[in-house]
Length: 105
Image 1 (cartoon, rainbow, N blue to C red):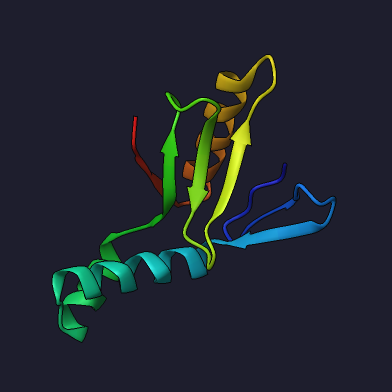
Image 2: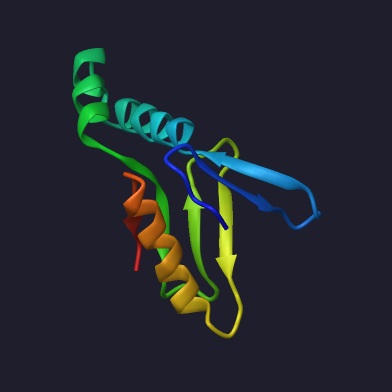
C-alpha cells in the first residue's frame, strides 16, 4: 500500500477501491478536540498547527489495527502471518510522510 503525504488508497471489504485523506482526518481530529474542550477558533488553530494526528492505532488489538478519522471512521486491520511487522511498516510510512497516529496500546 502506497502512503503519501496526501493519504493512501486501499481495497475495502467489498472489493471497492477507497481512500483516506490525511488532511481531512486531521481536520476531523482538530474539530473533535475543539468541541470536546470548548476551544475558541484561535485555540483550535494553535492545535491545528501543532497536531499532525490522523488516526489511532492499537498493535495489541486482535487483530492489530489503525482507525483513521474519516467520516465514518476507516479501520485497517492486519490479519496476516506477519501482521505486527506490516502494522509497524505502515506506521513508519505514515510518520515518514509527516503525520502521526495516537497509540491506544
